[in-house]
Image (cartoon, rainbow, N blue to C red; front, side):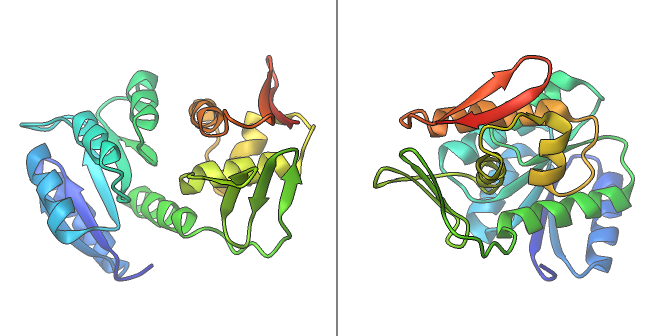
Length: 225
């Protein structure tokens, strides 16, 4: 994980300098740019592992940058910075493909912790369990592969972890906070809308399967099939 290139995208130099200081102390390499178009150019040229992306940017805002990268199937991980503690910004960011979000102003130590957590999740936990088959859906934790019948299903790292967690508890209703604890693996208390957004994405990914994620109103979710 140390040595990974982190791209900082913010038009406030004090923000990027502070983030750079703390990230480099942890062994990360950094580069910084101040507008959305420059961010896209850097991703294409430098292939950073992760981008810390402010929403409010000149030329292209952070949402548009995220949309363009995901439309191109860019694998870069994205931590979005929102200027206000507003659920709508956070939800929009997650819906268009951001991996996590952080509200400004932020503690730089929390920024480092979030960056490490996102990178760790993307690498995937070491899973040595046997494949789980439920109906026409097979989830192989060792290979981190999902198949519907014989067709491969492309999932992002967090989507895989969420599906695998639900499969391990097939038929059981898991509260959102429990899913956060099991599938995200770090303290994400109070961010239950994150689960809802990822479940919505996951439902689309496995729509061809007879296995479904059911909502238990007021409680959480369960995998049935």
